[in-house]
Length: 144
Image 1 (tube, rainbow, N blue to C red):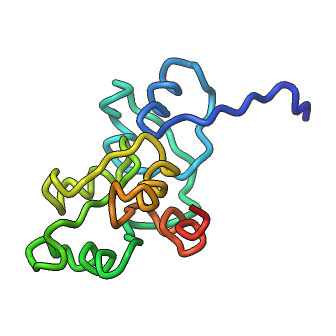
Image 2 (image 1 turned 60 degrees about the horizontal axis):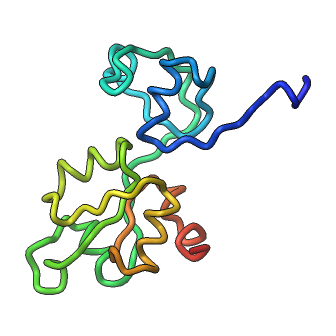
């Protein structure tokens, strides 16, 4: 094919479905959680989407500064060492929605991108980063 006929855009997670629905982009090619809601009616885009076969299974994971990573894994916000825990997460993602079901909002620090969520560890905005295994692997965290 002709590479000059392809334009790649790096979209924030919160904008990807509205960009697809509006025709601003033709295809999404990144890790996206496939679920019935998005298949029938994705609320931000106000339409449903068709998905290809799933080729990667992942789930919510935590990485961070000890002991806070373990606090998040145990959903512990009451012990003395965990009560001040803050978790950075890429906003507009399924991971953020899952965090909202597990933790009070005071513990969640939404960031515009996954990279900014990781940088939150360095900037001390949070002690934990949440995402898929690919987001919070030791390599990803160490790269920050």
